[in-house]
Length: 511
Image (tube, rainbow, N blue to C red):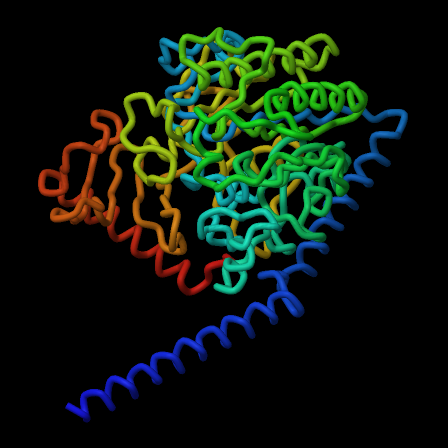
């Protein structure tokens, strides 16, 4: 028995050595991160700057030509993106909700086009926002592995220790950078969630003005920034992440009152439009709600039949109405394209409508979101289209309408959907296929859809995990048609594997 005791002692010592080595290794890695951290990306910064210089030079040449006495000058259109956080496909009354009233957003849909098959590029917010602003799938910008965390969170350091980064690479080209170079006034209001360190803030990526918060409203502290400086400091008691995600928990707020966030954002947005009415402008209004925790404006709390979640969404509806009223009052409606959408599908308490899945899922309920476009005189009123499009399409669409060419040193996954907006049912989708990326390990797509079918490499169901093919128009991912339509399944599987191999070879899409 002595040898057993000796072995146990030796094994115990070995385990202690392994633990000590692991702790030492983590400590060294932590120290490296604190002292020598270099954000991911940056290798194409020079090419980015060259492209922006070309856009600026072209804009300056256009101004010189327009100043000629014989020239006819047509002002480029204004752009407003209203982005909600976690608003589900079924949360608006124009999309079928019978408990939440959204008359102002519904009116915008009646005055423009409502899209029934519009997608976010990710089922969670950071990668989706990166995709919207860059026109590229999230894997291109190192944003595919879940969401970024505030700089005071240990998870931010853990992400960097794992080599995932916690900020958007500086060599990505964003809509505001291009439009600013083209002569637009650019402003952002609301939730950024693409990095919180110097060099990676909204003002560093082309926004001339910024007012808002850097993270989701369940992350603390939730300071309100004016450009790069804290304007309102959040002094609310620090809570566990789980407690702060419960919409039914009463929270005593200090400093930042989330009940009035939507109101503050709205006032700032209207002020930006008023200040820039005489020049082309791009406004990105990225609301913090209806992400949890939920806080209703005291002026209307308890009014919605949909409970506190309904109160929050109806606050957003009033906000949208006030913004549209300001655009109309200033005589800017016929020269302003307004896009209203969400960063991903519904979270708990929100509605995915009749879709399967929610936020975090690559099923339709996780990524199919509302999209309404209003542009009087350009977009016919009352249009509805079921042609597929994705938020990566906003980058090439807005640049196309502004008369700016796309960068040529990188793949732009989005496609110009201008024709789809202006002719609705008469136009085709700008895509033959769209790809879906999971929340974790999102470097490889796991699903693909075309005009009729969607193919998943896996159902994810324990005990029956296998590929599935569904009809996206007649079925909500319930019935597996892979044996009934084997040729369609095989074709989509081949396209999915081909794109996955392309990403493995060149994930950032450099040309």
